[in-house]
Length: 475
Image (spheres, rainbow, N blue to C red):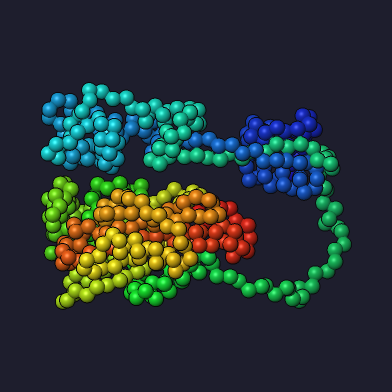
């Protein structure tokens, strides 16, 4: 540190100020380590030898996947180029054999761009040629560290092809006690008052329950008061079958991609499925049934066997509903759970790789969407949250589906706090439930209702120190 301090002081002595430490180099022409630089500046500032201010800037950089696309081309263009021109086309399985994981992602973008069409499980070109705009945008970001179109940056960040990095440097000027000489260690021979190691410290004040735990228990008590049964959620590892397939979520769905899901390496698979139920799920995905035409693809048991960290507690709900369907006599049921789920997210101000989900289902004959809306109003009313709005949405396993919003008076805007809907017949009837049985369901991130209920100021008070809003507004 002394060498770095000397560099700072000698540079100030020659130039009077250092406008930007990002351009500061040592005798070998190397920039100092940021942490070491900050420690040196802080030490000198405490001695009033210098005064410094932080300079913050942002640049955009490509991820490893983004760099690969900038060098070799985007997945959507690779898909287009892999499809022969003319009327022969290529089968989806052949394309996946050629491109692997890139095929799934590239197909979606190519369909969205209207570059390709599909017929009889084969893909065909819909245009003669394409421009790889994604690659051009990535090359521009690699060169300029930004892009003039903010929407392009947002889209590429969503695809995890680029990311924003904050750069911190400092402007430095001389302090009131500026000197080229740093204290010489006279403290080593100074006389200090003896320290009494037997003295008792000040007793610490009592702690507080964490806001999340307070709201978690409040939710739990509301569920129990309303006659719900708590589901067993002590299994974080689930098979893709219960987490996705049993919910009528297609095997090509983006949420099942490695970019969104944590897959286990060892053990990597499970084969413990009810055989008859497995076949019914396979059939409804592949060719349909129960009034549905299905998804029309070749369902693979290898995909269903993959073990993952559960992405939602709906995996538990699907197993509980299957158990309910196979009782001797159907009885209405109300289930709930509050536990951790896992997503392969890039951690930022609004996302974590692990968070808490509140899950609830009601199974009975004759239920309607009105019952779901009425229950949500009653449920949140017990939490003191009165202002709710419902917005139509899409989920693979519910129809109709609704997003739930509440007005946050601290943020002065509507904040999404959950998702809900009625489970589809394609999910329920393969389990063995009577066609007259309806199931209303909802999932809430525990962190969002916590912020709605307490507000940022109250959460700061409960935590006992100042926190940034970005630390609270997660999932």
